[in-house]
Image 1: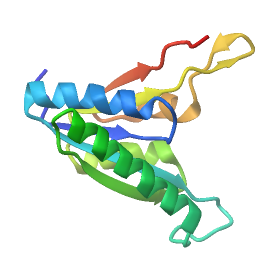
Image 2: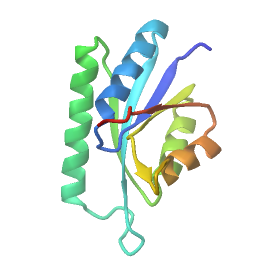
Image 3: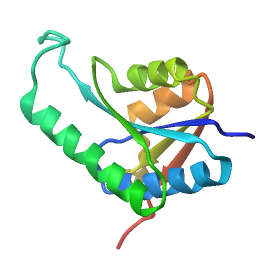
Image 4: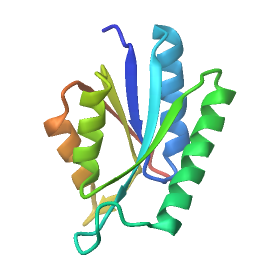
Length: 142
């Protein structure tokens, strides 16, 4: 598979730095462009373009951190902060708009009721993505 464009959604979790490093490795090997995105999910009782200062500031900080991690790995990435009702739909739309070859998802290690838990966003991206999807699940700690 020849990778030209990789979309990396970031959720502000501990796995973000690892997934950016994986994206950087793939990008260098393929001379691919990497776009890191963070989606602010806007509640239905607010306007979609509502000003959400705290969420916007948090998103900008995590995208800046991702750019630093990528730079240390020798890759320059593009970053984009989005507001949407549903993160999975925004990720899928971004991949489609950018003609992405790969969506690289980071999954923090989580358990619910004793089983590894895959969240709604990851599941919905897997089902609806217009391109390949690769999930990097954080290892179990402890």
